[in-house]
View (cartoon, helix red, strand yellow):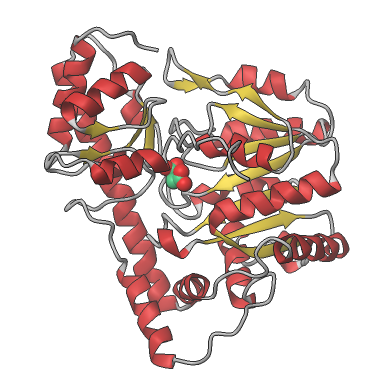
Length: 403
Ligand code: LMR
């Protein structure tokens, strides 16, 4: 029956993380997967989350099926977080939101919706993008292309080329954009660049699809929502998948949402209906626990304040690691410019190391990066940052080909 089934080649991020777990070397350093580790190398349980969970456990109560679209209190809290409570898009009811199985689940439901209701639309993703984007959209039956994004020479953005490519796309093309903390490069659009991009999206009648998995890790919760709010204020229709995996450190709860900003409330009703239909024939309805914990953290004023402070500390710690790594690398490899560690935002930086150099780092130094050269700086801490810099400097000195 299954003799023709091919072996799974493995996932460039998740399989690497599994390899890391199996590595017996005591000094190993995990800078591969996009997970925030604290200064002791552990995944933190946030106090805000612990307290919200305690409230739910104390309440007890049954665990019914959630509605197909998820819990109403969670969906409303998500809309307020993304757009602000008073935003016209929210108050007019023209945003359709479903609770999803992580933001990946949201991305996939949105992709299925596009395949069904916008036949012929193709998808453009940044070059490079998160390793799973292409796979996910192709899995939904959509054709995927790339637009220019990362400039290897400067460690910055090819904004002019990005815009001129987008200007050539047919109407209703889907443009996947990272709302903040670009994964894998850490290179974000400035506010001025978003403001320049939005008229192009509108004139060409393109369909933006925002991925907001790292809200709060760039410049802050509100600041990182700039793109979502600017698109909504400009009256564009767009998709946005967001996640609480990182911002609440609840990875395995698979807690996220998909929102679709529509032209009016009437269209939002039908869009929500079709998103529900997509969910029902995939996994029926979302899980209850993570969403209720997140909703409590977002809406209880005391817990919300604790969460914002905790998220702020995670962001500050990563920034401190960026500065430390930059300083040590600059001292060890004086001829090279490592300023990109300071200018790039969020958990990731593109190091410019080749796949071969990444292999040497892993094999000889037990330092794990994704083979694209992506480093997760949220895996650095006071005890391993120096060793990481020394290992990187050694690999660079060996003179293997850079990309
Ligand atoms: C990452 O990019 O490492 C994370 O978002 C985890 C994942 O699912 O790939």
